[in-house]
Image (cartoon, rainbow, N blue to C red; front, side, top):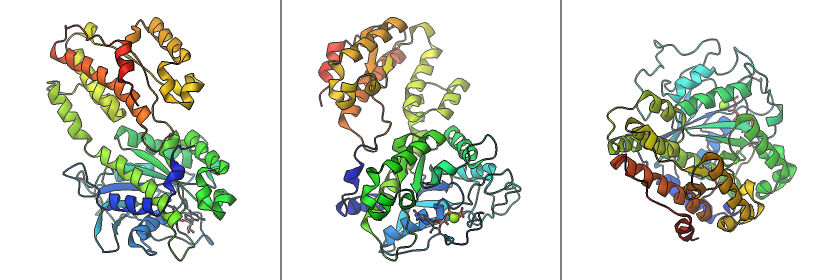
Length: 431
Ligand SMILES: Nc1nc2c(ncn2[C@@H]2O[C@H](COP(=O)(O)OP(=O)(O)OP(=O)(O)O)[C@@H](O)[C@H]2O)c(=O)[nH]1
Ligand SMILES: [Mg+2]
C-alpha cells in the first residue's frame, strides 16, 4: 500500500498546510492563469460531488458547486449533461489558481453517455462552458460552444478519471464501447497529448464497512487496497497515482478526515498539472542547448508519447544521432531492484552491499556488453505517494552521469567518455 499515507491523515495541521499551499500555488507557466483539471468517468461515479466537495473544503462550508443527483432515483444516465467549469473561492472569496471542468458520464454503449471524441475536444480546449453533450454526435466547428483557437489556458493540464470504489469490479471490461474501454482510449489520447493522468477513487465508504465507520482506516483496509489494485489492473494507472477519497454526499457539516483526503488528492493533481504546463519551455531550452534547428519527426513522435524524464534524455540522444551514431554514449539503467532483492526492498541503502544486485548488474553487463561502471541500479517511484531521499539519490546518481556523457558528446561527439567507476558512485550514495 502507499508508503507514507497514514501520516497524511494527521489533521488538522496538514489540512492547513495543504490548503495554504494550494491557495498560493505558483503556476509555472507565465501564459497559464489557472490550472485546468478535467474530471471524467462512469455515470454516477461522483465527478460532480468531487467538485462540490473540493469547493466546500475551501469555502469552509457546504457548497453546491456542481449539481448532483440524489442516490435514490438515478436514471442510469448521466445527470450532468453540459460542459461546466467550476472556479473556486476561499473563505475570503479570493479566487483560487485552478478550475475543474465537469462533463457527462461514460456509458456502456456506442451511442450513450459522453463521446470519446468530445472528450478529446475537451482535453484540447475546444469546448466552451455550456456545451450540451450529444451522445449521437460530436461537437461541430460551427457550434457556438466550439472554441476554434484554444489558448494554453483553455487546454487541460491534468486528466482525472473518477471511478467508484465500490463498483470497479462491476465495470464491464469487454472489447468494444464499454466504459473501461472508453476510459483506456481517453487515457491513450491524453498520453499522446502529454497530459498527466490520475485516478480519484470515490465511494470508499461504500466499498469498505470499516472505512465507513472510521475514514482513518482507509490506508489499512484490505478491501480498499484490492479496489485500488483492480483500478491499476483495469486502467493501467500505477498505484501511486490512485487517490481514494470520500465525497461529501450526506453530511451537513465538514469533517477534517474527509477534507484531508480530498486535499491530498487535489494537491497531487495540481502538482502534476503544474509540471505539465511549463514543459514546452523545458524542451525549447534543451533544443537550444543542443543546437538543434528542427525537431526530427522521430524525436517528435517520442516527445508525444514519453514522460518528461525520457524526453530530456531523448533530446540529447537525438542530437547525438545527427552527429555520429556509433559514438553515442550508452548506459544501462537497471530498474526493479526492490523486486530483485528482498533485502533491498526492505532497505534501499543495502543496494550496493547486496550480492543479488551485484549479480544482476554483472548479468546486465555481460548480456549487453556495457561495462559494470555504466550500469546504474535504481528504484522507480511506483506505489509511493511522497518523495523519498533514498530513491531520489539513486535516480539522481544515475541521471547525473547520463547527462554528463550526453553533454560531453554534444560538445565533442568524438571525445572519450569520462570514466565513472563504481567506487566513485558508491561514495556518492550518502543518505
Ligand atoms: N456514499 C457515497 N456517495 C457518494 C460519493 N460520491 C458521490 N456520492 C453519491 O453518488 C451519487 C452520484 O454522484 P454524482 O456526483 O452526481 O456523480 P457523477 O459522476 O457526477 O454522475 P453523472 O453526472 O450522472 O455522470 C450522488 O447521489 C452522490 O451523493 C461518495 O464518496 N460516497
Ligand atoms: Mg455529474
